[in-house]
Image 1 (cartoon, rainbow, N blue to C red):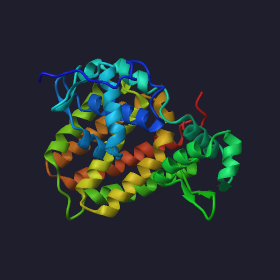
Image 2 (cartoon, one colour):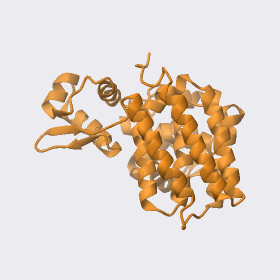
Image 3 (cartoon, rainbow, N blue to C red):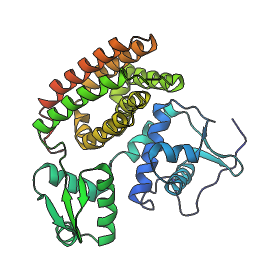
Length: 316
C-alpha cells in the first residue's frame, strides 16, 4: 500500500452527511457502490477523473465526495498521488447502508411518487410546484434539472414543465420490457459487436458476487447499478450509438420501480445467474446463443415483474 498522508476538509466529520448537497451525497453513494461492486482492496487508487466520467458528473462533486470518504476513514489521501482505499470493499457494508438509507433527494422522491400515483397533472408551473412542495425555486430547479436529465419531464414555455411518459403502470412496465427485448438482443448481433475483455471480467465478478450471496447483502442501489451496468456495457459493445442511448434511457426510466423491488430479493439471484450464462456465451463467441438467452432473460423478467404486487405499491 502506498505511503499516504491523511487529508480531509476541516468541516467534514466521519458521520456528518448534513454538510453534503444532494448531488454530493449521491456521488458518495455511487463511489461506495463502485468500490464494492469492483471488489477493490485496501491500497487501490481511486482516480477522480475516471470516477467523474463513470458517474456522469463533473470533478467538483467527486472531489468533495472523496474528501468526505477520507474524513470517514474509508479512504486515505496522498497530496501527490490522490486517494486510496483504506479498507477492503468487503468491509464496507456499514458504510453502504449508512449512505443508502435515502436513495435520492427527498423532493425528488416526493415528485416521483406523486407522479407514479397519478397525483400530478401532465403540466405544471414552477410556482405551482413550489406551493405544492413548500420549497424554494433554487431547490426545485436543482431537482427538476435531475428529472429532466432522466427524461421524464421537459421544460415548457415560460416557467412551465411538462411530464413525459414514464413507467407508471403495469402496462407501461410491460411495454418497456417488450421494447428492450427488441433492442438488446439485436445489439448482441450487431456487425460491430466488440468485447472489452477487461470489462467482461468485471461483469463476471459482479454477477458472481450477487449470485453467491450479494443478492441478500447488497443495497437496492447497488443491485440496480450492477444490473444497469451489465445491460449498458453489453449495449456499448454493440458499437451502435442508438442502441446504447436506448438502453441507458430505459435504465433511467426504470430506476424508481427497481428500487421498490428491493423487497423481492429472491429473483435477483436468478437474474445474476442468467447474466452469467449470457456472459459465458459471449466469452465462447456464440453470439446467437447470447442473443437468445438475453431475449429469454428479458421475457422472464417481464412476466415476473409485471405481475408483482410490490412493483407499483407505495413503499412503506
